[in-house]
Image (cartoon, rainbow, N blue to C red; front, side, top):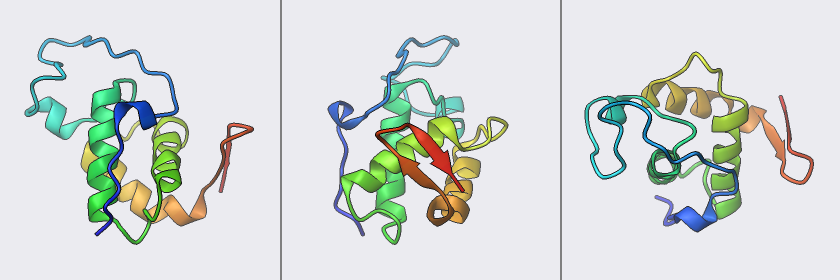
Length: 109
């Protein structure tokens, strides 16, 4: 297992961090927050990436790999995938197929 743990300051993208739905609260985890991933809330993305790093250590060898996950979540995972399990499965299938150029901000398959 990877021992990589990101903090909020490690995230590279901008986040709204405004709970828009009733029950969407960074202090409360469960229900919809447990199932769906809001890609614009830092606490949800951070939690997802840290869990992914722990369960999928074959992909995550460094913080840069975690940054790749962050960029893929925001810019490459199909928008219709909402549930964390769907996004997780997509990342497992596509992680090695996608390259991220952090300086230019583009993704390729």
